[in-house]
Image (tube, rainbow, N blue to C red; front, top):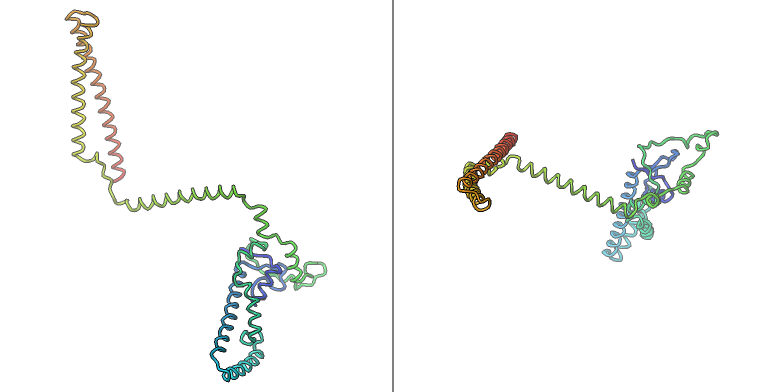
Length: 304
């Protein structure tokens, strides 16, 4: 939990809120801490008191404007009678105060109206400890223990003298501008990755019932693909076989100056070699197509 060491400025705020004895450590505790939650309640109480006093003053001013001179005298008499009664029963009541005292009280509360707990925390020593339970060490009177002879005011003065504020801690151990920039950039990248994962998860959740239609699974597409492959392979096979026979014959006749028979034999050799090469390439191509078909079938089975 978050606590603050009770110091003179904090004590002044607590006294102004009229919550002394209700927040922070008890008078006999030798720690004199106040929790973050208690300090929030103190600030809320101060704002509430300011609003109450301001509303009461505005109401009195409005009433005075509406009253005639005679009615105002009767009203003043009633107020004075009420003030006497209220003072006898509750001397701290705002209703029992005069307009001048209310204006003075409003002025003293005004400085706390816009006070923020962050401003207070920056000027105080922060403690991160387990839940604190007050003790009665200051109530004891043991001559051997000097601590027991202290009073709450002395502990608060000691806290003032040894105070190491949050602002001082930030200036000594806080991150530099370069470290802050690096941290912000890393945070931005991490947030973007998290956002991408969330978007991806949403997309998968939205499309989990949609079946993926592979165009290669379409029967018409397969027929067209096989037809294109057959036409391309047949045209290439016939063309290369013709060119092989023709090139073999011309190579023997014109280059090597062979007779008719030897030129035809060379043409036959080159043509047969081309046929064997085309057959090997055809077998390799068909094997690859079969392998791709098996992989797609396995993927479709897993998807189902």
